[in-house]
Amino acid sequence: MNVAAKQAENTIREVCKALLGKEREVRETMLAFLANGHILLEDMPGVGKTTMARAFSRAMMLECRRVQFTPDVMPSDLTGFSIYRKEEERFVYQPGSVFCNLLLADEINRTSPKTQSALLEVMEERSVSVEGVTRRVPTPFLVIATQNPFGAAGTQRLPEAQVDRFMISMSLGYPDFESELAMAKEIGGTDRLEQVQPVTGKKELLEMQHAVNEVYIHDNVYRYILQLITATRRQSCWERGASPRATIALVRMSRAAAWLEGRDFVTPRDVAEQFPYVIHHRLQLNTSARMDNLSKGRLIQDCLDGVRMPPMGVRSK
Image (tube, rainbow, N blue to C red):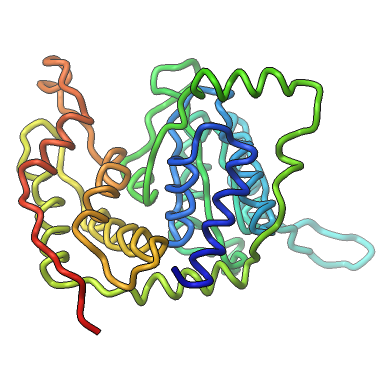
């Protein structure tokens, strides 16, 4: 494992100090950051989503901002606006909340479609357009968005175009018994977030992202990736199959997984492990599948089982 990958592993360990019993979820979040992608957390309130975002910002020395997406949040709250200063006799631009490195968009499915579309632009373009002027947000720029379970009070389903912009989705879920017991015993003591130490910075993260892009993928693995994506388009249980953006996301996440393991090449197993995280939020069961109470997770596993994993040896150097 190279020095940079060890640094990324140290970041994961630091974040796990604040988020007990969620090592796998923390690791997946780190992989998405390495792949320069955004994350959608589909969960109930109070399971540690904000804590995870703050822990990553602390461990990686990223400027972090949190926006609570209530119905009255306006697009200008995100993108910024201009105000007239009488003493200067001119309009002065006031940057919005997206001008940071890590944005926690909390309960995104409670706000208006207009505000969601403003976030959509900055997620895709890494820039905002206000009054005809385009301004770039800082680099790196990463979004962790949370949404309450659909059907909860005040929620609405996110547009498919916006959901597709997230590289991966996952659920933190409840902590295991021992982790929650440890949390209960620490109430009134030192905040676990204070134990998280800075171990890397913005410059190092950008260098890691560049290194991830250099990871080699054999043609057989590219074909395996595309066969998995195509399998979702052939199943009759979905409203529609995964888009080409899912193919790109799976390539990038597979590269990140290989790099974090200290390898300069992707294996089919890297692809298979990342496939559920990349695909879950992009697929919606159709009416017939919902009436039959089919499981989305089971159908995704059927896609994996139905595509033969190509044999791969270690690439000669």
